[in-house]
Length: 190
Ligand SMILES: [Zn+2]
Image (tube, protein in one colour):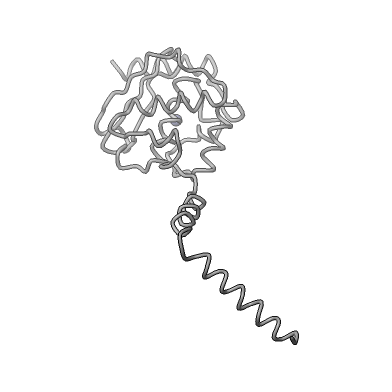
């Protein structure tokens, strides 16, 4: 056999074996395998985030607690958690933290605006507001605590969540700042 002919023979054999592979009984199994491999981790297939339901706001608190536990933060003792529905929050804001510098969590939500956000935006927003109320985190730390709702790509969000719960990027309000915040909240909610 010449070298040329040998090459032709091997390539024909290769093509034949490919055809053989994609037909027959193993077909369904192969498809399942390929589909499984192509699942890209995202908000809607994440085992924790996929439990979010914008029409049932406490699901976001449950998610935050579960997420914190992954990093050794036990928030299960916090039971005073309240969501207050408020239409037309100033500036088209979807949510605000009213429990900052207090020992409770109280989130004011414009549910219409909130429901129109993407799941990623909803999670970012809720983590941000819980960050204020639970950890008295200010905007200075950046990451999750950076102001303004933004769309955060899943992998980046995961990193920001880790940085937040491991204390890398949040800065607590000072006692003086908390004093001012408590006064502001008092006058606003009266
Ligand atoms: Zn904020």
